[in-house]
Length: 221
Image 1 (cartoon, rainbow, N blue to C red):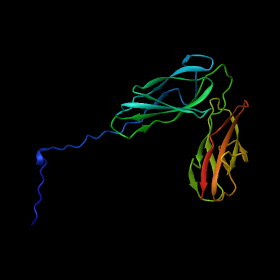
Image 2 (cartoon, one colour):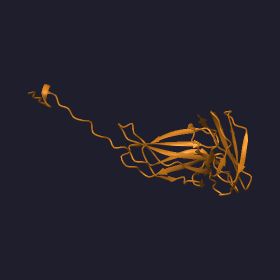
Image 3 (tube, rainbow, N blue to C red):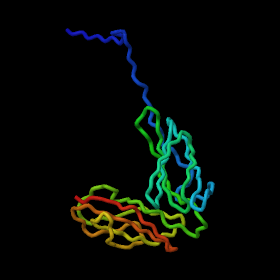
């Protein structure tokens, strides 16, 4: 017969488990509002204004990182903050996308808010171009089986006056082959064989404004 005994105080030491750190909750964005014109803030010059970004406090959170993307240039800037608002100097007459990451001290687990888009107001404008489209299918970097597919995307416009899209698709990483025009947010392709493909959506509104999406990539295999 074997007898096994355990002694937590053997050797004169003591042990204790590290306290569990809760995963921080996702923040809820407040301002600038989604798919809207931002006409609040301090005008600094003809090209820049200072806008106060706001979000709700999230539970179990010690700090936040605000990720701000200039949709015209593609530049992404990250800002760290411990409060639930942050003044940021941004370009006027420019579309932006932003999200907030909630963080907890001592934890590698973060939570991300929804992603919102807005136009920072510039000089008096009668209309705004559409926001650059987002890929729905295929997702960026995904792999799909050979054959015809239905490309799909999401495009939004403050003025709600998008009238058409042109879709570029080919095997060059700068696609220039026009495969179709449509007024919906889907387009069927011909059969695609094994390769890496790149595609882009160009949106047009009723005032002649246009926007180009990022170049999306997917693999057929």
